[in-house]
Amino acid sequence: MIKSAIESSERRRFTNKLVFKLIQPFATSRTPLYDHAYLIAQVIFSLTYDVRSASLDDTRAIVGLFTAQIGAWQRIDARGHVEDVDYDALRVYDRWLHGGAWMSLETGAIHLNHLLSGGGLSFVALHQGVIVGYLEVYHGVEGAALGGVLHIAHLVTSDQVSGVDDALIAHLVGQAKNLKAQHITIARVPESLLTHAVERHFTLTSLACVRRYTVSARTGQVFYRAVEHDDADPVQINGWSLSIGRLTSARHIWEAHMPRLWETIPEIRARGAHRLKISASGQDALMVCERDLYNPRSADVYCWTPKALTAQLVASIKDWAHREGYRALSMVIADADVKALGADFETDGYARETCALDLA
Image 1 (cartoon, rainbow, N blue to C red):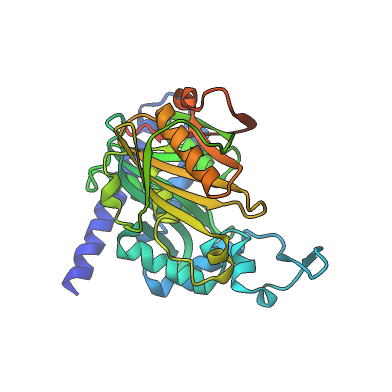
Image 2 (image 1 turned 30 degrees about the vertical axis):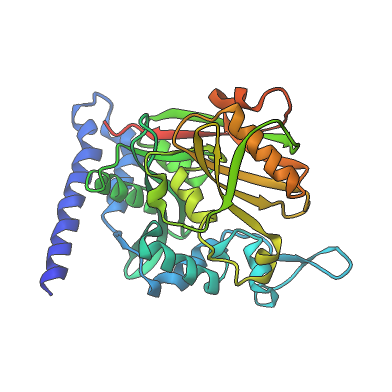
């Protein structure tokens, strides 16, 4: 009871600070108050939501939020044709293909348990005791330019209420100092709920732009050592950068691909993934090479390094991949590091920008 009272008091103090922060500009503005009606509405909405850490008991409700975003459930029939089916007719893997772990109760519970065991942070927003929003965040320490990072990976809300996204993000901002995070980051995706929610209240500063390249796997004149590496402890990448594959953040990609959470699903196990430690020309790296879903001779590469990406490391990865039977590698690389690829690459036009919220 004492703990509950303390938590309630902390929520009230947080709410008061949030209201003051959002309303303060109105007091000094010369614009008529009614012109600020939308933002005032957001303040009122934020008072109606209780935000807390998620628990395993919340799994079904969170899965419901994610699956409600899917317009049609489909699968490939025996003839290779796409067919629409009821959700309950799909196997776990069929549901997974629609959006990952949160597509079914079984995998959602495994994923949330992993987050609650230290893999990440998860928050739910409740309205009158019903879960109406979910926020998933990954806390990591990246290279010197970034330091402590809180990366927002997922934000999903019920379409029956308004202002839930604001309440969840405001809660995270309040947590940032306690977690010693210098940056809160997102992958800017036009038209996404997360991007819209953040841009309503914060200026975004671009940290990096990455593009996807296809590189040929081929033997080369390079000396390196590559060994299997099954240690999934994220402390190994503290202060490191995700030099290849940084679609989101170094920690998020690590938790998504390094632990062997999903190999109990036969189709995922059969697809295959290599987890390696590579040493090339004095540079160490940790790498995941994951076979492409549709082309077994192609693979996606994710590589964490303590230093900037080098041509020698790329050559080592290409040589190792060729010896394993791969012929094409998909690498997502920052513009500043593309020179390490040399001249042997193609781009498909895919790009993604990582941005930080200006918290000043």
